[in-house]
Amino acid sequence: MEDAHEINKRWWNEVTPVHTRSEFYDVEGFLGGRNTLGAIERNAVGDVAGKRLLHLQCHFGMDSMSWARLGADVTGVDFSSEAIANAKELAERAGLSDSVRFVEADVTKVGVVNGGGHDVIFTSFGTIVWLDSLDNWAGTIAENLARNGVFYFLDSHPTIML
Image (cartoon, rainbow, N blue to C red; front, side, top):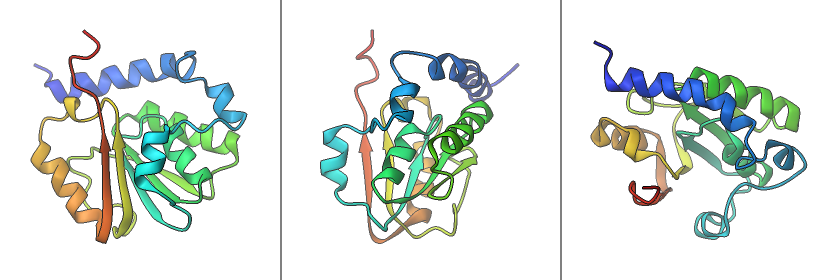
């Protein structure tokens, strides 16, 4: 029997192409310069120019690339091969390949990413409800956050869409 983690991963691989074509994500607007980050995130995290930012559960990377447009050196991580492939292609199209990289990995098992020591670790909306181990996820954060770094987490209650 297939475990919940593999079912979840398969679902994200299947839904990513739907998301990239949806009005909700508005890829064309993003390619035209739209920043996908809300004022809440931008104000709370502050100036990221010159900072190393790790984006956990980045999906197909528009928030990662939005941080890169604000001057951060960004690494996005997601376990969906389809999401990471789309993120890399979108980064090329947006001219952001030099300031953002994408890693296909399970955030609960990835270990140190891109040398660790990230000034900011960011994750937002629709993330922890999918995890089978908050302890392992927190371990990834602890392994990768620089001393005096900032972990920023924003999400909604998992039943908000019901």
